[in-house]
Image (cartoon, rainbow, N blue to C red; front, top):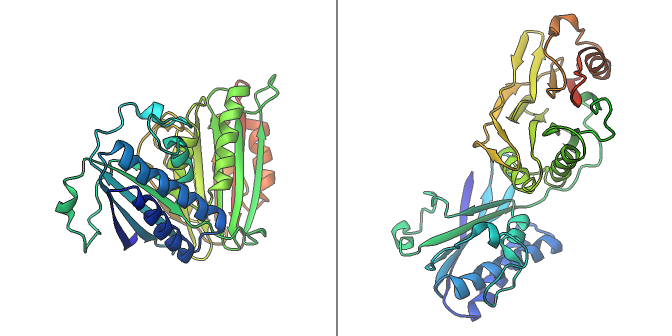
Length: 351
């Protein structure tokens, strides 16, 4: 991750609200944010600076940076430092409209939703090369937010991939607690996932579909940021587990991140490689997401399935040259459990 420090602004009077807002909005426009997203940046900065003046000891500092990741995605990053006594009830402060002084009253919850990354008292990055890190030790608290520039939505298909998917609810239920999503980010990049809401029925259906919706809305985020974002979005729901893949045809790579018991593997002419998930429940508790990368070349396939599919089958009994939909239908018809929702997702790299 490359960071370019752009602005360092002191906060010690009401006039600084407008100054910080205008300078941050100007930078956001230069980076490529549209009018709507630039307006969100204005709200974020105004609230953060006002909070310093009203709650944070009256003095602070804001640092606004440009971020760029290894795939040249850009973001605006804002560090806001203060000398206050902290937030005694973080959960309460996350509710919309929470304020006990004259701030905007939009609440940290709204700030968090406007942000793609939201950290309270994060470790200060060593990449502030031209900033005296020791000078920041006098500040007691910090909020860091990151907002990525949305990529233009690709409305076409990824012609290099052939997909097959099938999902059904537990017999006797009318709502499916499982869901899946396939989103083509560009002609060469695709993100796909299986989401399994805990249990089954209405509450599981709600949890999995909230996460599915957020993946579609935030699909341009780097995978770790996306997992952390949907984890926050799922708070208040029953929770869910997920298996998520990002396929980049240009680099012939597949990246995988899994939370909970979604199983899967990459199948190639040279053999089968299992996908590794870590324990946790989105919306409740998760470990730091871990990304695993695999080669993904012409003739390879990736298969994901929820725990509604039993594991008493062998990859050798399937012809992986068949259409993925045929394979997915076979698995759900022959190996699905009667006491749970079941989903299979298969994506093959066309030869």
